Image 1: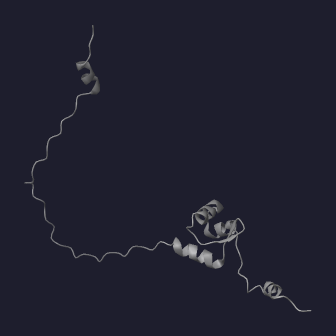
Image 2 (image 1 turned 90 degrees about the horizontal axis):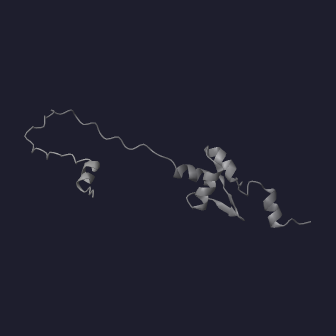
Image 3 (image 1 turned 120 degrees about the horizontal axis):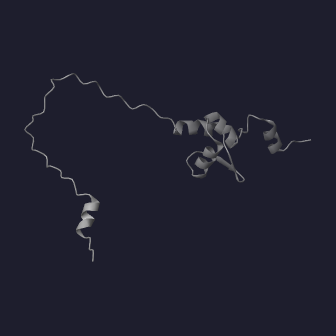
Amino acid sequence: MRQSPMAAACSDSSALPRLFRPEEIADALGCSAWWVKDRASRGRIPFTRVGRSYRFTAEHLAEIIRLYEVRPAIAPEPVAPSVRTVPSRTAAPSARLHARRPRRARQDDFDTTA
């Protein structure tokens, strides 16, 4: 009896990628399943849709890790110490600030007692 191509492909487990559920991805990432589903629904992370459920391959997991990887900024070259200059005190004087009268005092100006 001859096997169908689909049955032959199903019997060879290396031909089909393993699909992970959001809960399994969340466990691997150390986050909540809600976060995984939310990011997938917004199109922020790669996924496969099977029916109405999200499924992820190992390649998807690696891509998610790459997407959220943060690399340190390149450190600036150290600057040779230079002679420190003291700013001059001849700068223009700043405007003097005046406090407003309290609100209660301003309302007394308009108090009309008959």
